[in-house]
Length: 431
Image (tube, rainbow, N blue to C red; front, side):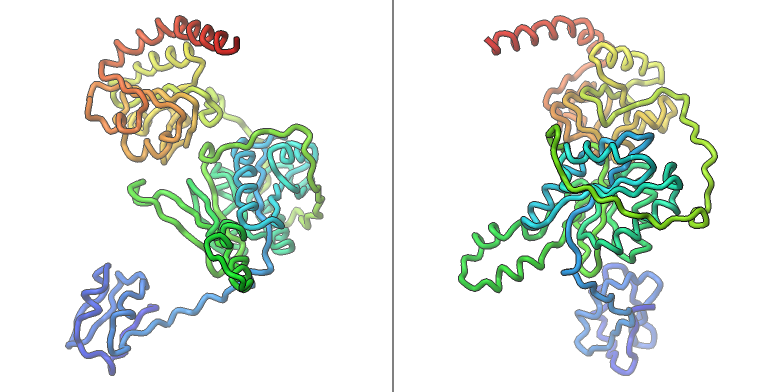
């Protein structure tokens, strides 16, 4: 156990018991005893006036932080197409790089076989440079193969920050790379910030002729990684002070994709991946895609979601009609998925897909915190619910209190008229 009591010094004052937030200290024979609930938070060490509590944890060796530079984004590609979340993260990585300093660049990392043609798309969306790791053995994703070549490249080039999309592949690859590099990883981030935004911001805050202050600022490049915790009831900000690179996964749809700059230029580096068949323990024979209808919630401009208020799985027939009329896709709350009314691929929320459409219809959804965490960044939210006190109305731009089986058909009937009115309004504004 990391925390222990030095019996010869303990006076039985019980200050440590009062300070412990986990009830991890008991009294036995007038001496404090650490039990199995201890989380090594060290609160007891701080309050003990007799130095009677020790800690046998090994100090984490601090890496040479000055040796690490630049922001990397894993540009996940499947079947020769870059995932949207990778393009979102390139834009976010560019923002972070500019905040760290003018010499910091954002690099996209492409892994696969015959993928050099994807580099231009990375440049178009803001990458200053692209690393290409090509090999026939990397043609299909394998955890072993991708982990080895990516870890080798990071060890050689030493990036400051590495970002992954929180996709099935990203969630598999990122923790294995982090473990191999003995660094930290924060999963499912919703916000990323740099502790000191720039030399200019620092200089404005601390006006001085002494340049040592600016030198100190240049070393303070910690990435603040914010993610929901305790079921979304609070936001935790996590840092990686002692090791590098700083690594995080980010859910699709959370970050805003940068405007595409056609024909943008950047530096292309073809790395030489050292990979052999013996490095890969799994042989992928074939990839069988699901025969189920594909749902692209992260790319949709309009999402029509249904929840427990539908009353039955047949209610999603109405939601499907609604989505078809509006040109949107069908989403759902977790309650509807858990009830078996619709496939998990449609689920919006903290345990489903995070979305950011232009228009989000929440139909019969009460608005649990886990659902709100996945859709509250939508440009416009329209809520339809019988209960006027439903939490969903607190985040909705427009709320309709009523029976969705009466309200939705009315909206569907008026949709064409609304589109015509909108187009007429656009035409008048153009004149």
